Each structure stands twice: as structure tokens, then as C-alpha cells.
Length: 108
Image 1 (cartoon, rainbow, N blue to C red):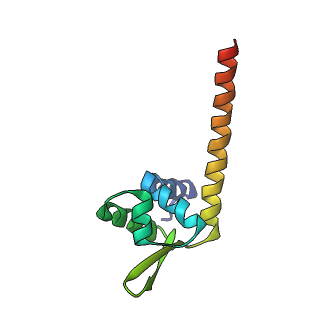
Image 2 (cartoon, rainbow, N blue to C red; image 1 turned 120 degrees about the horizontal axis):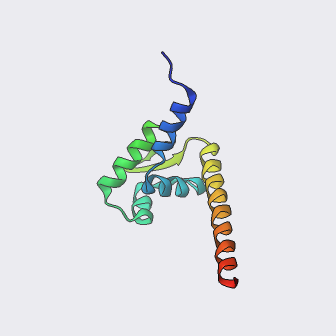
């Protein structure tokens, strides 16, 4: 029996439900990164980064390319980058509304 689309979507969003995974996807939305670059940018332990990258790989959101002993990661689709941009836009709108509300409260 196939699972309903809403259930698959929920599982997809669970995959995105970790700050390190989001940070990695944001970085990879700009350009390909070597693992060493991701370690510096995320400031997490190598084992933790490896675990989060494995989750993203299994979900099909990132892919790897080896160059010598260096492993490079990139997003699998421009849609992943678009998703990160849309999430940023939604949050910006939400926070802008909160700032306006705070300003209204201060002037009342």
C-alpha cells in the first residue's frame, strides 16, 4: 500500500528538521563545498557533520564528488536552493510582521 502524499511530505520536512542540515543546505545552495569547508562553516564535530550529510544523502538532497582525497558536496537540484530561499522569504515576512507589532506596542 502506498503512503499518502501528506505523509511523505511530513517525512521530507522531518529530514530538514535539524539546524546543521539546514545550514549545510544553505551553504550548498550557493555553491559546492568540500567537507573541510563545511566543517569550518558549521563549526560542528566531524562525526556530527558526517551523520547529517548522510541523512541528506539518503534523502536525495545532496550528492558527492570526489577529487583525490577531497569529497565535495552539492545540492542535487536547483529546487533545493529554491526551497531554502522560499523558507528565508517566509521567515523574513513573519519576522517583519513581529517587528511591526513590537513597534506598534511601543508607540501605544
